[in-house]
Length: 295
Image 1 (tube, helix red, strand yellow):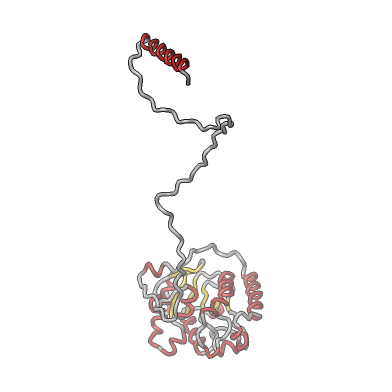
Image 2 (spheres, one colour):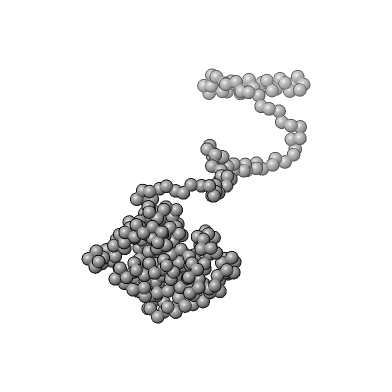
């Protein structure tokens, strides 16, 4: 800048200050110098860009899903020892409405199901060793349904449940209750005889469970008696010993369930017959029948 231009600039600033002084301005705040502009002042100014919205991470991290597999059952695991009333009641299932099918329709449904069972090969070992399937017999509209464990040699030969020595004892129990075998519907957990009369395996019981549930649904009994621990375990999904399950009602579908000793156990332990008789008294009392008065 030359001397003349500098003098004119100083004069203009002095005149501006004097005008501000005459207007009453007595103090000016010292300002910071403006930053220097870049040399390319002729380049176009770009429009400001909108900043993207940032997602704020939560202050507390979300829980991670566990990748640890659930514990697998082992053969050495101990049986549950729950014996409280609450634990026993929790094995029951909700009740449903009563079936409206007549007796003839129920029998027809059972006959169709029995035909399907006769062709079943879900358990290869049982299908190869059986003489015939043992479906079930009795009143298709029975108020009481008996469920045993699996057919034995006599049942495998005749195709009917409970016809051996245990079956004859069961007939005596039915007669003592002032009923006939034809008044009751009788079935088993399995419809094929396990070799050597062994207990059913869990897989075999699972393979046959659909047939049992279909029989229960068709007959639609008011009461079910589980004869022995095998029947009680598989119907009610319980590992409690049968002695702990006696003397109480459970529910399966619409039916009340009583658990008692198997007739074959009574053949080996005759003293337990009085316990079974107590269970029958308990069952029939709920039906409004006093067995004590009929003895």
